[in-house]
Length: 185
Length: 280
Ligand SMILES: C[S@@+](CC[C@H](N)C(=O)[O-])C[C@H]1O[C@@H](n2cnc3c(N)ncnc32)[C@H](O)[C@@H]1O
Image (cartoon, rainbow over all chains, first blue to last red; front, top):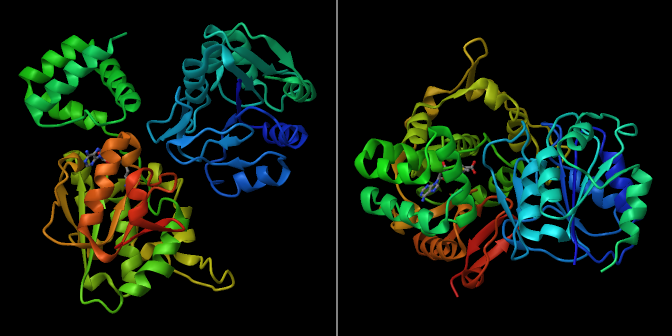
């Protein structure tokens, strides 16, 4: 079993939709998306992803059990945690790195709960959220993948992660897709 | 950093010395709050536990710091639209309307409700009750003065909740925000208009007690983004309590990312974002 967690901010939306459009509809693992949104864009995000995605996408409710082949999007204004018992919990605690949802929070909870079974992917973005999360995934024995900063619309986030953590792969969007397509049990 | 055993000792001290029972809070989120309190006070868990035993003011402060008070005016406008178009119309025939905001934080949810009721011509016969465990937020709620800066980012909620009819998108509704709220941007304040103040009764109350804080039955109970901090046992107990305290036609409103799981789910009918009490 693997658990894929993806974080992104400014400039990550096209990469995420491209990825969701290209996966096999029998993708065998759950996927958790933690994407920053503009403050005033609260609704319509999950619908926009759904339009492109071959996998079912939803914003989970608190304590929702995790299913394989399902994509969970952190709801606007909630931090999203994943737990060992394969449920999702939400909270409205303080913003972290000016963000709620915060990528560090989702990534760290995935690292704590799933350790080496965790695949973390960090995409384009304009702040440093996700760097500590990447480090946590790496230290828990998981796989840390960062989108190549040269390809990112905004490189701050990926550069910070590469500095903070000894990441496994630095890949283009297309390479990230083929990496995910090859993931097997 | 600290062991689960240490946390249990802290929870016991909070209960023995202050009467606050956190043993059925979700452990994960309780731990995160404790970590934050330790960090902010530059203490370790043993010092904290001892300090709350000897200083009851400090204990009260710790309890407040453990709570998460994030809130918004017309948070999740889609819920308010449903209340406006699907819940309030049924209450017109009643002589009085009782509403309980359980875990009301600084009252933005309470004033949002008052505005909807006023728009519907129902405010006069409504009795609005609001409770929270944290007396600081209740004080702010009673005053009805908020920071403009922290509220401004979601003022669009107001327009969506009041001026959009999801059942008839062509309908043009105009409700200027100045009708209900006074802005002072240089002073960074957002004030609720006086005629909305002193309508609601605010009272300190701990949901863990299971008691009904007011001696009435409610047509609507809102308990939004509170139960996410509780474990399943306590959640279920509260779904039972709320069921008892609701009128036969009463509805329960949770946060939009919350749901009734477990044995009590058969006692409510989920109608979109609203839970209707079921009698059988
Ligand atoms: C995140 S706020 C939600 C505010 C509002 N209902 C909303 O959804 O915007 C949660 C509130 O629940 C309160 N709370 C936490 N535990 C409580 C308890 N045991 N009894 C009563 N209120 C509690 C907190 O103090 C806090 O103000």
